[in-house]
Image (cartoon, rainbow, N blue to C red; front, side, top):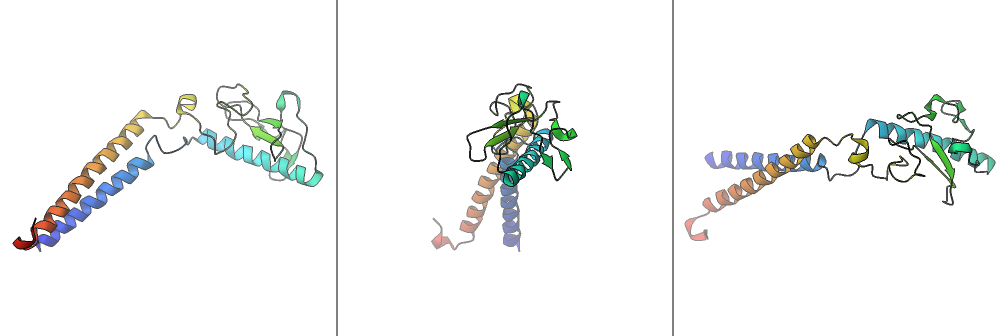
Length: 184
């Protein structure tokens, strides 16, 4: 009974250490792009605008021309039942209109937000273009809380320490349960 309870404690320690490691890795600063409600909202709007323009291109066979100041083209959105160039969703959370440019890419155009700095960098820099691009904490100051990163790293360290401790206890309890002639 004593040996079984030691095994249960070791298993619980092992599971706790793995949980801390996984949680620490998930919340670590090394875990991909930042997640921010404004960027997420912009990415959804960019996708909606892109979809409306793509449907227009599919039906007409023509990629809309760029407009002055690279404003969105006058394309009707089925989703909003109005033109994407006049909709209230034409502006990003920082008060700037979404931008549209024709490109030599296979799609033929790009839709993006100029981002928090308000400077049109043609989809580069901090401009919000798509979910594959990484948005830096230094630019957006969201989800960059150093306390969260510290807690994640601390959780990983505690998890690793618990893992080493529980594995060593598990090994020592396994060795102590062997007959004296089989112990190393």
